Image 1 (spheres, helix red, strand yellow):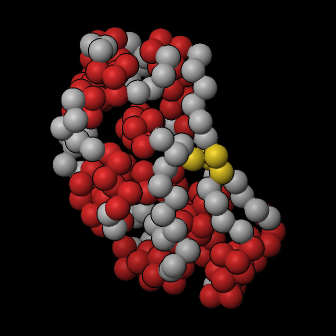
Image 2: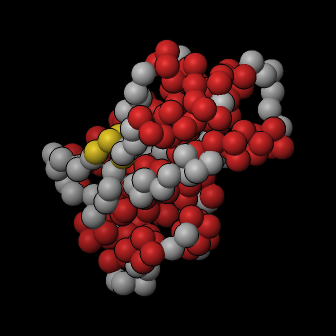
Image 3: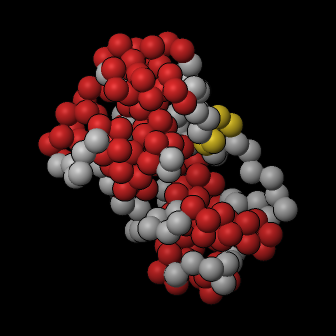
Length: 205
């Protein structure tokens, strides 16, 4: 099985101290938890396919499908996946709709119709807008790319149920409105992605 290159999201004491100085509640949680590691996939194509696989399914299901894909196809590359049929991709355990999207995106990138490398020169908003031109990629998937591949520093996704749940648990809220969420999100700036890493962890505690 091809080994996918991963690393940890790069942050340290400076970001944690800054967030703690702005938000005592988050600071106390970070002090209790210590550094939380977030595994990311630096290769943009591999990370994009992983994010699409991960849409609306459990972490356990994602892991199973992802392992099957690596066993079946080897390297998760545009050229490799473009050569497969949607049926072959779907057989790894995902929906046919998702398999078709993955196959189409792989073909577009393999043929040069979409250049992922250009994303590195764009702002967060521009990255989201460009990725959302791909069929099957919505805002949440694009935001996951910003954090889990590109290591952009200031992303807190309203579309991520676990982040919202983590925020509710952290602040003892029975529910959260978009307005409340945005207030907290802006309060974490410019290190929102580090706050997200801790909110994810809190949501699963």
